[in-house]
Image (cartoon, rainbow, N blue to C red; front, top):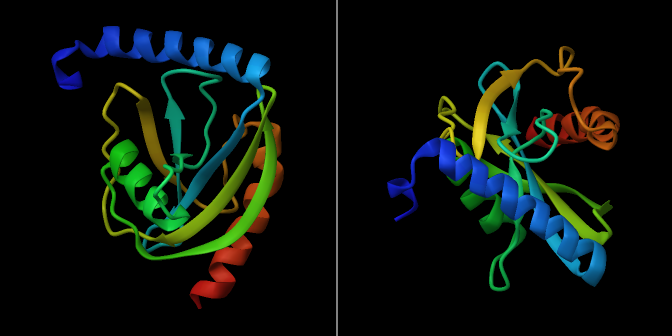
Length: 160
């Protein structure tokens, strides 16, 4: 159904929905549960994406965890939806608390491997690319730039 909406209009609707969601979070201050996915390719590079809404900075794929979903199930779904990639040998490597536009957000960091090339839909995700752990992009949210190297080390330690 959503594929019937032209991509440019769809991106605009994502931006509008994001503004409204941020306002709601600031007013209501809900308790959110989400996941971030560290998907590594065969060369050990980590997959990062840029959304069509928000800051436009690079970050790991991810999103909300549904009421009946486990963090790993949500991570598998979010990675597939955002990049078209499948995650193998998924495991939780961290759980962190973040503030997200006034809302509390418990984030489960899930790591695994992928053999797939990312294919962003051009609607929610405008760019997806693998980065070497020692060559992460400068254009990342500050809290992710601080946490991501440690998460990568933890993921590599458990994947050995």
